Length: 304
Image 1 (cartoon, one colour):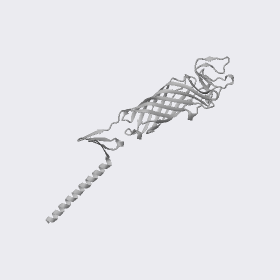
Image 2: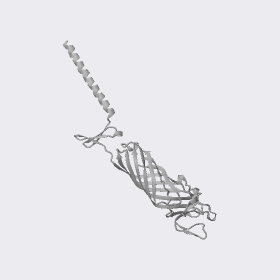
Image 3: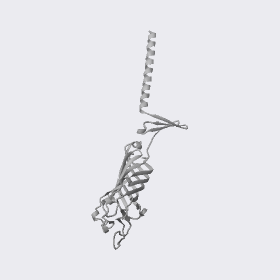
Image 4: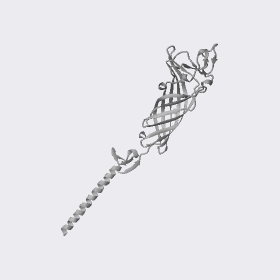
């Protein structure tokens, strides 16, 4: 009887020990499924990163004592040197039947009147390049809704088709008039030669202001980014570049009745470091007579 009791007691101890081991292993297994641990040693200090990076890791510093610190994203981040590469164009709403003195479109001396076809662009060669010195993102709501703004140069080249013979003048003698008549304001006229290259360049110092939505604020490069807003640009340079067999290469710098300020709707969408951007101005790029509303579209290369 004594031997039987001893045997039963030993069996109960073994059974309890096994159950405890299984429970420990199960808890350990469950814990390993939910918590990932990375250990970094720096001298006598051990840093343990616990959790899933996509959900925000928790850092523990170990140097005799445990200290729990939550990683925080800065409320203001700066991105230096953002580059845009795209195309420039415009929507032509000009009424060529009632233009003023800035457009010499009268059929004088057998020269046909200027029309919409003379201002048609070569889409693939009308280039837009934007160089943003910096862009900043200010947190508004949990890093998902942000205010985004910056400062940069907006460079636009409007390349006319080879059939176009238009030239820009800051003022002076009006072509094809006899006796010669002069005008003191800038004007556009049909030239007498054929150009192999003819374009208008307009460069602006621009400030964009946008609301930005980020679907993954913990890992911005892995989330969808959408920004919409407005921009204000100041025209600091305008020029007419031409190339012909008769005159060679010429760059005519001056003031050609372009609006000094440009206001546009702007936006961008994408994931990672490459995004699609666009802009559209609801007002004409010219001060008067010509009603051409510029727009751009292209790719933006940015860290966020």
